Amino acid sequence: MARQKKTVITCAITGAIHTPTMSDALPYTPDDIAAQAVEAAEAGAAILHLHARNPQNGSVSIDPEDFNRFLPRIKQATDAVINISTGGSLTNTIEERIAPALRFSPEMCSMNMGSMNFSFHPLAKRYDTYKFDWEKAYIENSKASIFRNTFADIENAATQLGRHDIKFEHECYDVGHLYNLKFCMDSGLFKAPVFIQFVMGILGGIGADIDNLVFMKKTADKLFGDDYRWSILAAGSAQIPLATTASQMGGNVRVGLEDSLFITRGKLAESNAQQVAKIRRIVEELGSEVATPDEAREILALKGGDKVDF
View 1 (cartoon, rainbow, N blue to C red):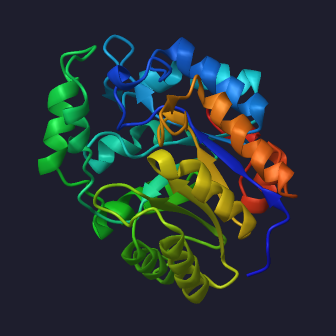
View 2 (cartoon, rainbow, N blue to C red; view 1 turned 90 degrees about the vertical axis):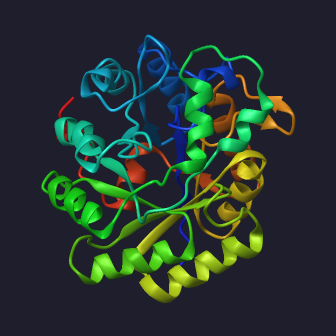
View 3 (cartoon, rainbow, N blue to C red; view 1 turned 45 degrees about the horizontal axis):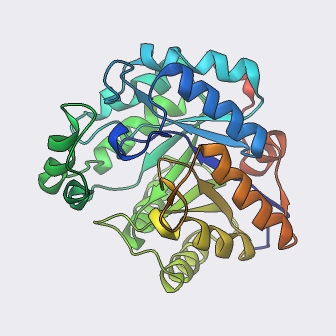
C-alpha cells in the first residue's frame, strides 16, 4: 500500500470510558464539548469523534437530544468532519446506539468490529472519592460486562446507516476484528476504501506496542491491499508514542481525552486541543503534513459536510 501524503488527525473529545472524576479537563456539558471540539479543530484535528453525556451528571448518553445540544454549534464554528460514536455504554442495545447517527446522518460514525471483554475495572482502585454517584459502580461493573457487536448487530447497523452514505471508522481491537471486517466486506456490507482504526491498549484487546502495530498493519495489508486507509488509537501512556510511530509508517492518528487523559507521563492534559497540538507538532517536525478537513474528506471518500442533518 502506497504511503499517504497527508496525515489525518482525529480527536476523540469525550468518551464512554472516562468519568468526570478522573480529570477536570474532561468535557461533559454541551457547552464544554462544543468549545473543546472547536478548539481541537483549530489546533489541527480534521475529524472530531463525539460522544454525548448527560449534562446533569456526566454519565454516558445516547439520547439524540443530548447530541443536538452541541452538533449544530460545532458545525457552524468549524469545517471539521463530524464522527458520531455508535458505542454508547456497555448496557445499550445496537438500536439505541445507532439512534443518534440515524437522526443526524453524519459524514462518519464508529463501528466496533466484534464483541469483546471491554474492561476498565482496575481504575476503581485509583480513586477514593467520586464526583457523581454512578461512577464507581460503572467502573467496577465493567469487569462483568461484554461489549456486544455480533455479526447481526454489525449487519443491522451497516444496513440502516449505509442508506445515509455514512463512512465507518472500523474500530479493530484485535487481529480477529480485521478478519471480521474482511468477511463483512466480502458480504457486501462495506465498500472500499474502508477506514480502519487500530485500537490498542484496552484491557480485553491487543496490547499497545510496536510489534503488535506492525502485525496489525501487515495483516490489514494482506486482507485489504489498497482498499483501506488506517489510523491508530493507543490508550493511556501509549497514545503519543504509537501515534508518532504510525505517522511514520504512513498511517493516520487519533488522540483525545477519550483515549488518554494525559499530555505526558504523570501530567494531565489541560484540553483536547493540547493533545492535538502536540501530535501535530511531532508529525510536522518529522517531515509530514497534516490534512485539512477537505483533504481528509478526499482521502477517506466522504460524502461532504453539506449532506449531514444538523
